[in-house]
Image (tube, rainbow, N blue to C red; front, side):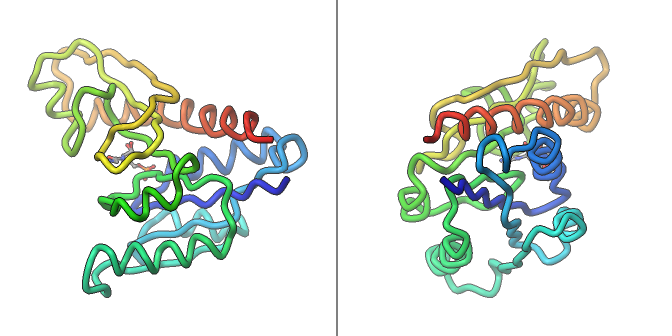
Length: 195
Ligand code: GAR
């Protein structure tokens, strides 16, 4: 079975890069019949697109501002994604709220990484909020995507300490390093479970 992976990004794409690197180092095409076939961004200047092109991965840009509604954008995005017949759609810093129709279309094959220990701190500014609340630990969560923002079954998590005097940026960097460990691991685990 050909397990095509499509990754959606909006920015630097470091999680996408970590997954691509893991797939090549771990010989996913040979071992799992799986490969990253496309990287799609809603922003033309997303730095991750350069990495994808440099690694001979198909890229596409769909500017959400060119669409009249969330539904219209998601419909076009689905067409772009479905060209690749994905077994797995991976949200990697894709900063868009998805419509229920989109989520339903990819039921059981849509996952996300969120920079907090869910169910704590859904939404934005997770690191500053964790610091402000006096949390001693923070982290990241890989989860299945449901119509409710930052909910869905938890697939993997990483925990890091919040250090005295931490800034949101310092904490974000510490968390991101661990995201690069758990996201490829969660993707590989899901691919392994697919027959
Ligand atoms: C990551 O920290 C990811 O967890 C977060 O955006 C960053 C993307 O970095 N995602 C969200 O906040 C989603 N709500 P990257 O582009 O370098 O992978």
